[in-house]
Length: 97
Image 1 (cartoon, rainbow, N blue to C red):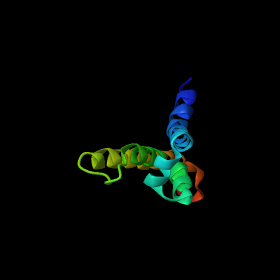
Image 2 (cartoon, rainbow, N blue to C red):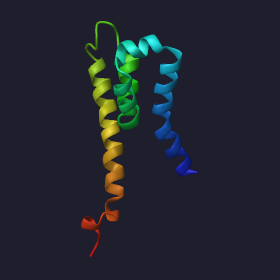
Image 3 (cartoon, rainbow, N blue to C red):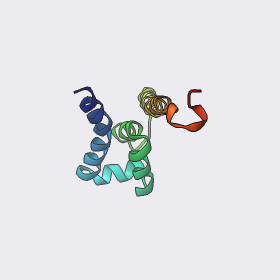
Image 4 (tube, rainbow, N blue to C red):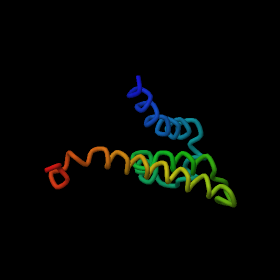
């Protein structure tokens, strides 16, 4: 059951960004600008991409918006770092001797 929760937790931001992209393509294109940047954002930094699209306004990000964007970036980097640390024994250079 725990694995299912983690699985849905990793898919949530990607589905959120995809749904916003499909429901409001003009807003998404205005916020992100490029389809390549959007795809890379969905693949590598999904929480940051989702938060950026949700917080974006035509005048840009202001004030406390930056806090939420940095928090989303830390969540993304934490998940990347946590998975790298969890799989460190699979690399030959870090194998226990």
